[in-house]
Image (cartoon, rainbow, N blue to C red):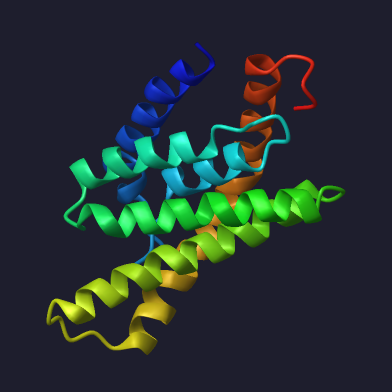
Length: 165
């Protein structure tokens, strides 16, 4: 029953990501609500279902995106793994861990996307991608990380009562 919250929440995040957030770009980058939501959930102390959420988010994003499924599986799986490792080491400053994982997760997803596009034959200047897409996306992800972390902390304490969330 505790895992049932993932389906509607991630579904709503994917809908918001694909329909609303894309309307507000900064240069060429947009915020990634699913990535930040997944990061915030995986950093909660009582949560042990981070990889389940990563799998579901990967499936949802693969359905609405033109990127292949393995890019999202690798990026979101690596993101949750990094979040769980940092959760154990930076436990006294959870917002610092949130910012670190959000930054590295965005870089990982954009790096894997760039690698896939390069291997598929697209000619893209890396400096343009970093300056026009990745850095603005990191900034927007950092901005939405603050409220989403608080919401996920409250949700984790509601879903896992009394387990240190």
